[in-house]
Image (tube, rainbow over all chains, first blue to last red; front, side, top):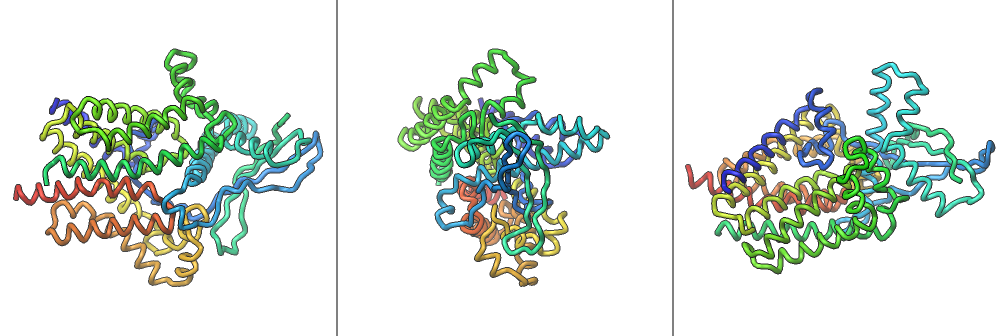
Amino acid sequence: MDICVAFIFGVWLLISIIWQFQFKSLTTIKEFDFIGIFPNWTFFAPNPGTSDYHIVYRLAQNDTVITEWTEIPLISYRTYSNSVWNPEKRKVKLLIDCINALIKTVQKCRKENMSDLYMTQNLCTSVPYLLILNAVTKFHQNNTDKNATHLQFTLVESFGIGSTEAAKPIISSPFHRVR
Amino acid sequence: MYYYEYLYVILLLFVIGQVFTTSELLFLHLKGEYSSNGFFSWKIIRLDINTLTGDSRIGNILDNLLDARGFVKLVFMKLACLIILVAAAPYSYLFTFASATLVLCMLLIQFRSMYGGDGSDQMSLILAVSIFFGLSMVSSPVIQKYCFYFIGLQSCLAYSTSGIAKILSKKWRSGDAVYEIFNTGSYGNKTISNLLKNKKYINLFLCWAVIIMEIIFPLCLIGPIYVSFAILLWGFTFHLLNVIVMGLNSFFWAFTATYPALIFIMLDIKNLI
């Protein structure tokens, strides 16, 4: 048993060390570690998250846009209770993960010289995109105009609490039918 | 201190952190975020592994385990296992069964959290597996020693990798990173960012303090005892501040739970020398 445990820990540690390197050949293999057994310990580096991501959406009835952009409230100012209890951080992290994955997909499509149409198809059928669309649809169903037939969302990046730099859109979806 | 006592401190810190983490998952479940139209919809996340599992039996089993109803059962099972780990006698059948089930639950929950999971989940998995091998029926003094080295080296790898990645970053080297992170709504704090605004040298000091301390963190294993404890004290304070300023509560428990293993290795190496 001792040898067996030594082997498991040894292999796990060795792969964890290799995992820290950003080799191109490793990127594909890393995508198959769905569970995340092998960690990547580069917290807030080399590119620290110095911006906030927001989801805004608007509604349309058939061909007419009927609402202004509405933000889904995900980011709130830190309270001291967050030190003990902070469930919302998982939603913020999910949004960051999804946006990073979408940006990677766009970069990959551009690198492969894909047409805009094919790139849009690729994006709109990806899991991160669908997760965001799903969240927007749920928020809309609970909060806003029930007469809307279509919905469009945009992912927006802002640059800090006191920043004067204007927020910029990252990705805008086409209109999706909601009923 | 005996091996068992070090492991038990690790277990207690791990359990406290996991109780908070698991109750957060439960809260999100109650808000419907794990339902099919929630933020963490299994129906959608599943598409990522469809090519691997398809409609196979594994796919069906995963569907039953990880859809909203299965997920809440997993979360409750994890909570029950955590309670048993504290209540049951180590090396017993019950402890072995609970720790093995806990590892399984954590693997499945982590799989479910492929979007939205973080490094504290991964460190917690490392701790859970080590607790299984170190305090279950399969344990032996040799295995317990392996557990300490495994946890301690993963912890050192985490800090030093993070430090090296930061020194390679222009934003960290220039001293902009700390203020800019604290200035976000996602991980920041309005009061602290106001305090740090236009304080170039303080920001530079903070960035380089994090870079240097993270890179030299493994020295705690081989340095003089007062240096080792100073490094651990820095680590503890660092995580505590991250909790207060950034809301990274789960990291505090997951990473400080590795410190007893680091102390064990530190003393073990000193005994060897």
